[in-house]
Length: 214
Ligand SMILES: C[S@@+](CC[C@H](N)C(=O)[O-])C[C@H]1O[C@@H](n2cnc3c(N)ncnc32)[C@H](O)[C@@H]1O
Image (cartoon, rainbow, N blue to C red; front, top):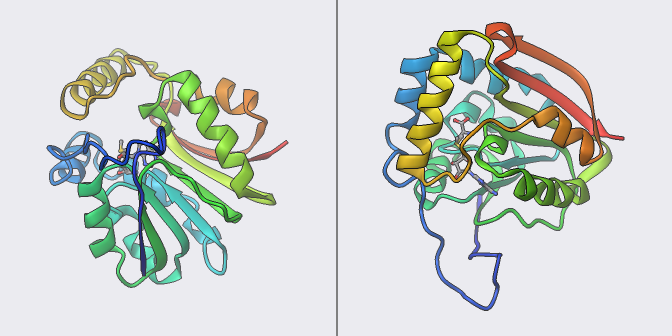
């Protein structure tokens, strides 16, 4: 385990520690998601763990890292988090891993076989996501894979209601700017990735997908 401390990369001249948007919810985040979704989000995150052994892995927005605990000994690569409170929990949860931990907007110079984006893209606006994916493209090997787990458009009244509540909750307690769900497939295709495989839960509301570079 190694530590890399980053600062706000948006403006390198202003060396201020990053605002911790998840400070108030980092301790209860896992309990809350389990209460609302049971084990479905964990299963979506873990769907493609079998691909991890002996691969260089980049995890962006992994939160407190607890989802990756079952496979921590196999993890080798980099872990990037924007939230200091989430990152400090991840460092403890994944202490058996061989990851280096970094605080801040992801900005790596290395190339990886697998890039995990677990429920992180839906926290970004469309333009921010396209810029983020342009950066990610530079870090994925030509035969590398992007492994995404996230929310897609809800179909039932119940799903629409939970989606609305979840978005308002994150706007209120984690200062998310986004007020809707992104059209992930359109944005990933626009960024130059193509979908290879997917597993759906709840009629496609929750999905785990594998993408590769076109
Ligand atoms: C909704 S939480 C998901 C946490 C975890 N992946 C899970 O599935 O339980 C999103 C996480 O992504 C992090 N995040 C958002 N944008 C990020 C970025 N550009 N780089 C690194 N982390 C980011 C947030 O700090 C937060 O911990």
